[in-house]
Amino acid sequence: MSHDFNLSRERMVKNQLVSRGIKDERVLRVMGKIPRHLFIEDALYGEAYNDHPVPIGEKQTISQPYIVALMTEALELKGDENTLEIGTGSGYQTAILAELSSRVYTIERIKSLLENARKLLSQLGYDNILFKAFDGTLGWKEYAPFDAIMVTAGAPHLTKPLIDQLADNGRMIIPVGDRYSQELIKVIRKGKDLEQKSLGGCRFVNLIGVHGWPD
Image 1 (cartoon, rainbow, N blue to C red):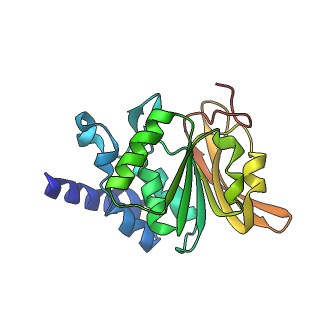
Image 2: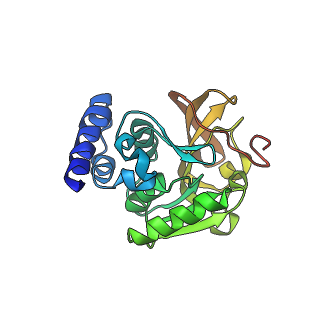
């Protein structure tokens, strides 16, 4: 079976990522290596490397590989960053960030998802991830500022506590819009100013919390 998954990963990288313009070699290498199928239920293994999101329970999903790659590439990680992830979910994106950053701080409000992700990531040997069951819209103040922040759920607006916790020259990727469709926004902090750039349309589950959508 493992051979099939290696082949599926190679195809995913070539057909879904490289062909759509993902160029960051580190992102491509890591996504070609991490066993995405382990982050979903056995029954859905066949879907793991397909070009669409996959449900992981609790009304949450593991994002389409291309969106994961696009968001990760946009963070411009070099390897020495403290990275904050809002929405641990299955832990797949967390693993990618852990490979590409110095340390990852990940927040998930659904405890069962957090525990499953923590267990799996520990089994896979990651030891540079800190987990917290919490309202992600509040960020993680004790460890701020962060060089990179990735939000994997759709927010109604740019979330102020997260912007406040972004380091100078720090990058944040966040989907912003209504409950049904969002725009992927890249925010770069330049001193007191924020540069914003749209990376295109997307659709994420809702970011629930004090500074997000009501539950």
